[in-house]
Figure 1 (cartoon, rainbow, N blue to C red):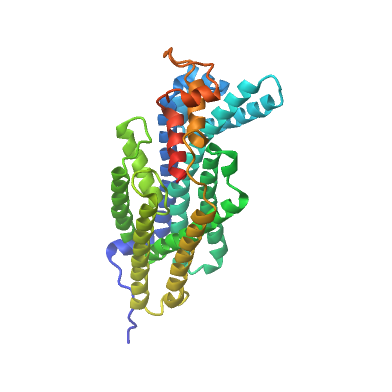
Figure 2: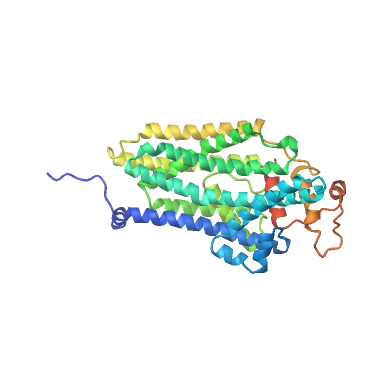
Length: 396
């Protein structure tokens, strides 16, 4: 009697299984290159906003010899920014030891702080355009092969994602007053709730992908486009050009596919977070439901994972993460900075120096901190606008 096989493959699924290793490798390479290209495009666009305001000798040399664009084409633009940030911090360290150069010290520190914000944004883009998708794909491969002993490596990878998110938001505190700087305890709590909500999300995606590999593409595209439209409805104003603003919204949609990221002060932010996490919880339950259905359909072929244990555990972690998030925003998150301090005052003060070489004669280079606070606020562009926007979205 011929034994029946429980799986019924279509031709496309058979080809995928036959050459699955090459397909997975191609997806990994695509994620790596796509993430790099995304960061380079943003880096070039932000350089284009302020080529006349570059500060370091390295940047001036590359601009004078028209090398900034080739650097980005060769995927070295972010490396150029890293070198620039390193030199500025080194310069700040040297100047801070000199008693007679306090003004230059303050200016150098301001430049380093604002330009470092762009590097933090690139790391955030890389986290959710490369690390998080690769983790989901890697988990899917592990689940299909039954190599569950690699769970420690998966936890380590998820922790790295949560750490990058926590470090980005910790960096936002440099725009606040000294009393509002993020402590190590606050950073730890922020890391913990991100880890607790990211693990169920990437695991649900991996479980779904392990049984329905082609449908994960349709799921991503449909949900991502919906999230991009939501970002558009928030009237984001992060880029210089309205056309390129859609690229930023596309990146935001990619981040939202995995984790929450506030991009606008429009409306009630707490209500938006509740709606986001409720919607993502329903989506995660749907993914787990489809996985559970396939497990029961092919009973005995997925004995290594028990849906009655996996699903309650993941959902429990998710809701514990939401609880830790509430604890963070109740006792650890800084309040909104006043207009005369924190990110707003620093942006106005630095803007006076930043625009000192402009052709607008109304901008004075001798404004004191008090004069700057009282003077009309100059319109911010480039890195100043980006830093102020994200800092204002963080403090609420």
